[in-house]
Image (cartoon, rainbow, N blue to C red; front, side, top):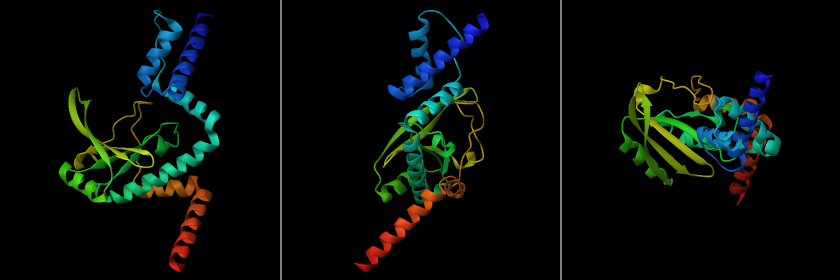
Length: 220
């Protein structure tokens, strides 16, 4: 009985943490877990659910409320990701996160890794594209010591976050904070194949629409 009660309590924590992220815009899993635990348990202590458990529940919640909308949004986000990656091709961009896995939710952004040994060169490239962006320095613990990385935030149709790594780290994959597995990074060709596989009809409509638009412009 005690184990059953513990499992039920864990499910309540998972659902409340997912609700906080879905409805109230809590961004970080840890913050959502702490708030859920405080609301449900008060000062009582219990092992908190994993990020993966909350991620699964959050995805199901998003599907239930915004299933059709999410499919369209995912396609649009992947199109934008392809466009950004094409413009940053010389920096070996790789797509990670929810847009690559398809498990997006409201407020999801496009996460890209890019690789360069010259931040100045990369900034000059962005300036040439005339994109609006912000730069922040983020400290991450790596190998037991803090390492500083540059993150660039693009102001486009969807928010885009670029994590800048040195070129020698392109073959080094970190582990996901959600499930602990190595992060899957998609090249632009892999992303294009994914779009053709998972969004075949939408891609056909998109291409057809572009051709009609091009023909119209040619006739003007």
